[in-house]
Image (cartoon, rainbow, N blue to C red; front, side, top):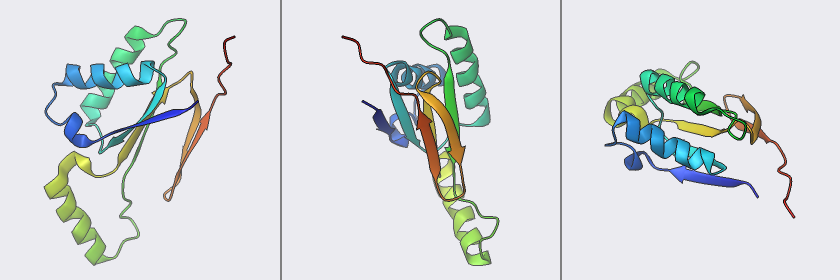
Length: 126
């Protein structure tokens, strides 16, 4: 069974970097695909990947991460203005971040309109 866990931005907003990483990796190591409201800062994402690399072993193969946020390239001036205002007010809450175990997620494809998440089929233990 595939489990998606939604994590609102308010769950990690006031955590330290180490606490954020611990919370994220805890969910991912439990076999869940984490869908977070918002996105991590580039430095936070780099530290998450670094922490992940330190934990790789026979059972844990790493993580797959993708960030989806509104694309304003083809937007009208009004939409660009709204987007800029929303970013000022919401900060890192705009968009979604999807994080999952590399053992579980085979591939993540991102289009402007959708995310395609290909997963590995888990073998059942008897």
